[in-house]
Each structure stands twice: as structure tokens, then as C-alpha cells.
Length: 224
Length: 224
Ligand SMILES: N[C@@H](CCC(=O)N[C@@H](CS)C(=O)NCC(=O)O)C(=O)O
Ligand SMILES: N[C@@H](CCC(=O)N[C@@H](CS)C(=O)NCC(=O)O)C(=O)O
Image 1 (cartoon, rainbow over the protein chains, first blue to last red):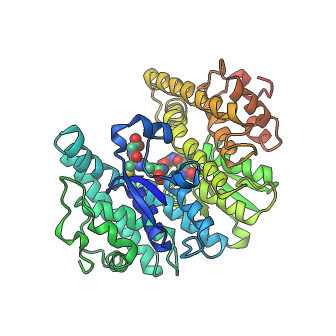
Image 2 (cartoon, helix red, strand yellow):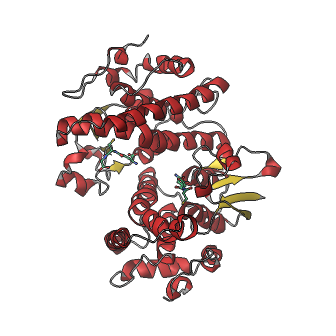
Image 3 (cartoon, rainbow over the protein chains, first blue to last red):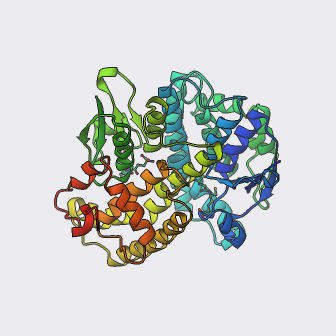
């Protein structure tokens, strides 16, 4: 059985979990808090980051980096392929995955995690309200962009569901948990997100909680 | 013919150019300075980053993000495949590409570019010697890691040349141009790098210069 090293609000682990869920691949969760920089974890992943995926029974080398893990799953599990279509369609899909993994993460998810999770549970500092305001302004800008993408097609990369949707939903769901998303005026993205939230692959994520941090009421409501 | 938007010291463009060179795919260079944030360029790539690859004659949508571009080339050009072997080998290759593209870039190439290129040609500030010292210390740490990888096998990911080697060489070559690499005590990596430097795919990169910034003497010497 796969073991996934992660914590509930790691967006990159969520991306992998959504793909595992869509593909119907079972896995156990192993709790890892990368900010503690546990020696055994660094030995396994020199980058010191979650997610890492191992399969002790099969004696595989640990897999790490969420994109490398997702490409691996795409290559080894046929069901629910999320890198589809022409080479050009796949390039657009991968571009958008990078967009959500780096730009959305950098502008929104990372500062929210730092201000509202790391400071609460680790450094015990008070959140910086300017950084939070900036992240929430960036979220409006980013959802304007996803609205624009979804104005042109049903899914982020085009006419079929893809890794771009899973990457987007992973980031958005963490930002939403941390109160960073104002859904007003983003009806296109909200409609798309309602559809994703009602998928079985999403359910385990929505029911989990990070200790000491409560999500807003609408967070796990499929008809928010 | 492909057109590649880039500037001579962009490591991500170098990664793509090394792959194009290995595959024998022709392309024209289009000079783009992303720090100028040219409107037409942002319209093409909302991330505002180089590289972008287009083929106006074929009317393809522009390709962007170096990793998405390299995956596209791997899928469409059979010659000189750089994502090879088992799914696990490919996962290790992709993990290392991310390692060089994000960690090596963040710790070494990005600060060197900022202090020694952006400040010289754009903001006209003096470089921060503390930032430069940090980057050079990080380079020693990173080359210790590549020495360790190359102690175990001939190439970064294992027994065959792969995208991991091209990603590493792209970052190292820019850091070396900017005087950030001290080759002393890194014989394993130096030996590997000599081999790469003598490949025809590398030659166009080594002969190019960034205006106003001279590389150290050993930079384009294959037997440095
Ligand atoms: N490129 C990595 C990024 C993973 C990442 O940034 N993980 C965060 C948690 S959400 C982490 O472990 N941060 C700790 C650190 O960077 O030291 C991936 O896609 O898996
Ligand atoms: N993930 C991108 C990163 C590209 C990147 O960071 N390019 C730099 C030049 S080396 C850039 O355009 N920087 C300008 C900016 O980020 O605004 C890729 O792999 O292509």
C-alpha cells in the first residue's frame, strides 16, 4: 500500500490525493510537518518538503515532488487519465499546473499558510494583517483569471478535466480553508469548484481538519 | 521554424536549448528581457517569464514554462529522448529537474542574476556582497550534492543521460558565467560538466555573451 507523507493543509499533497482518488488507488496517510525538519524525513527527501510517497512493501525508492509523483501515476495507472489530448493540450495542462503550483501558491496559499498556520501552531506569532490583505487581493486577481479560463471552456485547460483542475482545486481548497477566498463575483470559478467538491475524490479532503484551525462555515458545503 | 523568447543568461531557456540541440531541432532566438515586462509579452505569457516558444507558421498556441516545453519536445520528437527508463527512473529524473529548477535556482542562480545582472543593466545598484557570499556558499553545498550523485552513477539520475543533466548544466552554466562557482574540490561534478561542455548542443550557449557582463576566463574552456 502507498504511504503518503503529508499534513492536511499541504496543497501539493492534496493535488496528489485528488489524483489518487480519481484513479481509485488506495493509500495510507503518514503525518509529516516539514517545518519541524525531522532528520529522517530530510534523509528521505533532501528538499525537506511534503509530499513524499513510498511503498515499503514494493521496495521502491521514495517518490517526491508532487509533479513527479503525478506524472508517475499517469504513467502507471491508466484509469482516469488527467494528462490527455494532443501534445499541445498536454503542454497547456502542464503550463497551468505550474501556474497554480508556483504563482497561485506564492501569491496566496504560501502567505496564508505562513500567517494563519505556521504562526498559530509553530512560531506563536500574530499574523501580519498587511500580508493577509495582500494575499486576499491576489486571490481576487487569480480568480479573475480562472473565471476567464472557465468562460472559454468547461475545465481549466479546455474541454476535458485534467491535472490543471486538480492543481487549481488543491490550491483553492487550502486558501478557502484559511479564509482567503471571497467567492463574491466569481460565479464561473464557484460553479466549477462546486462540481469538483461533489466528486468522491474530494470528500476525504473536505472532512479533514488541521488541529487548532477551523475553516469557515462554507468550506465543506458542496452548495456554498 | 520555432522561435524561442529568451535572454542569454536565462537558465530555463538554456535547459530548453540544450534539449533542442540534443534533438537536432532548429530554432530562432527572439530576445526578451522579462524584467521590462513588455505588454505584448505579458499578453502572450501571463506569468511574464522566459522561455516562451512559438511557431507562427504552424499557428500553434505559444508554449511556455520550460518543463512543459521539454515534456512537449519529449512527446513529439523521438530523437535523443531525455526521459527514459522505468516509471521510477523517470520519477527520479523529474524530481532532480525540479531540484535544479527550484532549489539550485532559488539558492544560487537567482541571487547571482539579481546581484550581477539585473543590478548592473537595469536598476544600476551596487551588488550586495552578503547576498553574493550566501549564493557562493550555497553553490558549494549544491555541488557537494551533485558530487554525491555522480559518485554513484555516471549521470545525475543514474546510468543514462537525462533531463536532470540538462537542467543541472543549464543552472550551473549561468552560475559559472556569473562567477558563482568555485570548481576546487568538486572533481566529480567538474568531470561530468567537461563532458557536457564538449557536446555540440552546448557550443552555442558557451559562445554567447550578455552585454556588459564578461564571464570568467575558464567559462567557455572545455578543459577548465
Ligand atoms: N515542488 C514541491 C513543493 C512542495 C512544497 O512546497 N511543500 C511545502 C508544504 S505545502 C513544504 O514542505 N514546505 C517546507 C519547506 O519548503 O521547507 C512539490 O510540488 O511537491
Ligand atoms: N517555471 C518557469 C520559470 C521561468 C523563470 O523564472 N524565468 C525568469 C528568467 S530566468 C523570468 O522570466 N523572470 C521574470 C519574472 O519572474 O518576472 C520555467 O521553468 O520556465
